[in-house]
Image (cartoon, rainbow, N blue to C red; front, side):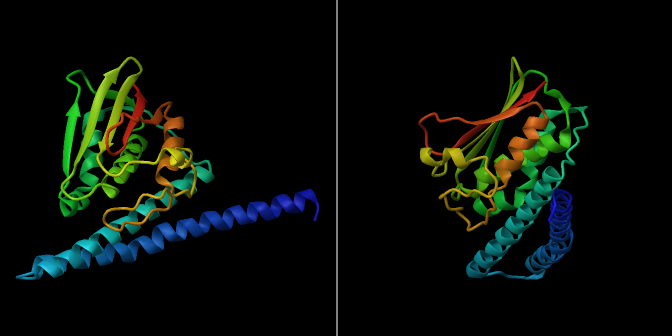
Length: 239
């Protein structure tokens, strides 16, 4: 094969990969959403659910939501690989966006009996950026905090103003990240040895996607080691 033929084959493979990920996003997401709705109906229409049945229902919820999250991360990776991420800046209230991200995980928070402590600066929180991708960034980091937190633990979400713009810090009190595994944090499909407290799955894409989005947003992310139990990620966003 000459160079042109090789390029043509690579282009075909890339297109097949894109279409496969598109299929996963649309055709596999739908049955998961239907199962989720059926579980909700069962729970609402059952007059009495035993403790054991509630445990099963909670496990089903966490499995479905974990699957939907993984599909969402594959969708984001597909758009990243296809170089389709376009930033559209607008003015929005970052504090409201943080709260929307938290509400995305209301079911997981309820099941794990987690306490979300939300702190924000008393200064203005109007931000000029792409709200959709800012929310995706916060969701990806918050998802990990929820995933690796044990029942009835706190998760602290702090929104601060600083000289560069805004900082969103998400702190959990789980088992933390091993120092020798830090170099894997932002790599595609790399999973750490930490085990999710509810058995949730992971593809190792959330922080990879997050770092890419933040690069496009002129922001950054860093793991803060403060000697305390758990993990603390600081997301820097321009004002």
